[in-house]
Length: 408
Ligand code: MLT
Image 1 (tube, rainbow, N blue to C red):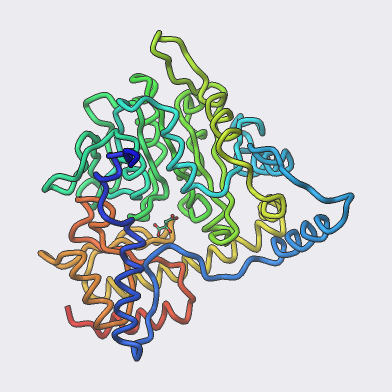
Image 2 (image 1 turned 180 degrees about the horizontal axis):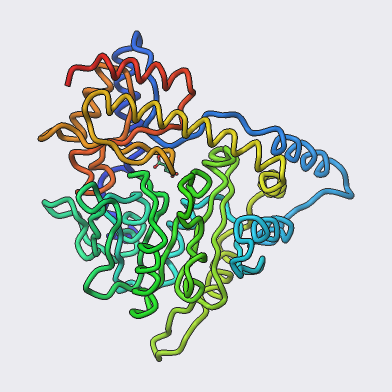
């Protein structure tokens, strides 16, 4: 028998959202009479907007004719989408189209990008955190199994919950790789310009690389909150940014995202020489990935058109309104909340002593609402809970009514 990658055995038995799905399936089977409202995983519910649907139809029709048919595309994405993203999301920020790599989503890119670094690289991540950052580094052997405190050994945890105002400070020790997500999943908090500038300064001083997850950029409403890390001077030398069409343009099923790898971001080889990460990522993607489908890239391009932008912004507003309804409902229960104003996620501090998986069970059994226990996002998430604004608006209002009837 072949030896396995032992590092996988350091992971919890299942991925957070798979575990939740299993629990919900079992509950549904035992209680078919309860109509569930699913506000757990951040999956969109609005249909694709007309500009995107029109582009999809057109691209499918092109594929039906010899003249328009396309086989393999460029692994790094078609120029039309790379340019559309550069002109829209990164306008005025000095990002060239050839620094943009189109993919099938930010989750894959965020999980894969760490492959470019040594197994001994020191990784810093916020706590609570999107589990993909931690789990992918465990798989790569940069961390050992979770200890009794719920932390994987070897990672640098940066607490960033209610107590820290959701804004992690750079660590005293040196980190090679730093994961930042703003607006944040799961807390819904967005980093200020000053906070982000502190991170860029740290990364420049320590020669670290920041993995900046901006999947929720389209939800930012607070004036002045940076939408891209490249708004911060000096970030082009130290940061890679990840974007997604999933949450803003409804592509959780279609699948499209992108990674921005400026030519000016480097790692170093064992001899101390500088190596551009862009070249390594190009090599990795051309070897292991065959490109996002043409029709999906045409659909993503349409999301950057004036009509596409107006239509997707209207969807985002629906989700933000939902988040407002959820926030109000929890505040009505006397609970402290965060997020929901620049992000689709509402993060709730549970009553003193309440445990997040217990609250998951209570909400499911007494209100038929599926949420996400804070502990699933890391040890600092214990005592907290996440609901998403991605539900259907009527179902979200119904959830708020059910919450109002809960006696905590
Ligand atoms: C979440 O609920 O945290 C997200 O849906 C996860 C993801 O985008 O992969």
